[in-house]
Amino acid sequence: MISADKMYELRGLINEWSVPSGFEGTPAADVLLAVSGGIDSMCMADMFASCGGGLTFAMAHCNFHLRGEESDGDEIMVRNWAREHGIVIHVRDFDTESYARENNVSIEMAARELRYSWFAGLCRQYGYKAVCVAHNANDNAETLMLNLLRGSGISGLSGMSLVSSVPCPDAEDIRLVRPLLGYTRNQIEGYVFYHKVPYREDSTNAMSDYKRNRIRNEVFPVFEAMNPSFVRTLNREMGYFSAAGDIVEDWCRALLPSVVTHSPSAVRISLPALLNVRHWRYLLYYILEPYGFNASVLASVEDLLTSSRTVSGKRFEAAEYTMITGRNELVVTSSAGARTDDAEVIEVPSDGIYIFNGHTVEVKTLQWSSDMPLKQNDGVLIMNASRLGFPFVLRRWQAGDWLVPLGMRGKKKVSDLFTDLKYDALRKEAAIMIAESVEERHVAAVAGVRIDERYRVTPSSTSVVSVSII
Image (cartoon, rainbow, N blue to C red):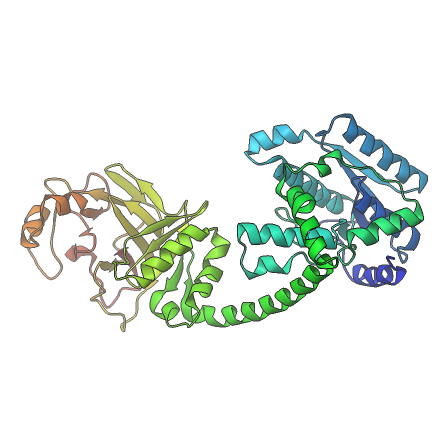
């Protein structure tokens, strides 16, 4: 049976928390309970009403209008229960299907985003310290199976936690609590039967259209036949996975400073430092996973790093980020920052990574010091920042372009420079001119090759613009 002692422990925990930022006044209640009308959430509501350890609460019910009269029946039952027990209840209607279409998400994801956003808003409006949801040990075991099937790393093996944040934007300070997480569905059913708690059965739970339902209805019965206590076993193992995950997290964090550097425009992963780590594959996964690179991208990168092929010049895409391989590093930048343009010219307004004319070009401003070598690595040019200011342009070579090569006095046509370098037609086509404007034929540099004398770094220079073809 679900004990009152656990509720008193929960009260002690919640009373230590403050209300969400932005709320002024006296909170309407300690916590907000998300109550759908199903057996789990009604069990939770009755627990708080009968043995809540002094916690005050309000209720929130979402009508997603996905099951017609059945959805309306859920709302009526929850409203009646709240009225009979003198509990404040918030009810909201959602056009879930329209939201899913407009945002190109599944019905499940639409309902999740709508309810949690609304819950967070209620907490800020009324000062509730937390949102309580009725996830239980069976739900936790189902989540473990789903994470294993889609691949989620060691973090996904830890399952749900008793306390986390409401999963919606700008809600990190609003806590999400799972009071029933330590109880199985059988225990909840026993509580509800003993205390005669009303609840509504969701007819879609018997269908296996959704992955979670399929695991619950088709897979778990097989597990239960093999081990009647499998839910408790899986939840116990998730506790061990969580502890192991903390150890791995500490290991990865200790290595990050020697492998990863951050700048306003990019995240850079040193390949020599990465490959010197015994378990570099997992460390690479740990670094890249937050940026949304999937398993196939990681496999391709691992294959590239262990092959004899040329590493530099490859590009990998995630939903919001781009990763580009350099000679000795991987560079991750936002997709908005890695601009691609097939035109004859692009403007460079600030530091960043630009994709132009078949090349990846990184621009960054650096402080100049006397110990910085004037001769940079191949493909890298540095120019006096007081002379070459933002914005400047990258453009293709045009007949008539010229420069005064560094260290020389006379001007030289870029076409003659190409001849000296034995460029064929393809390399001429791929060349990038750096210029102050589109019309300027006296170019500042041929990217990765030569700079003009006007832009040389001098003893009085305080900062430089570095332009690298990576």
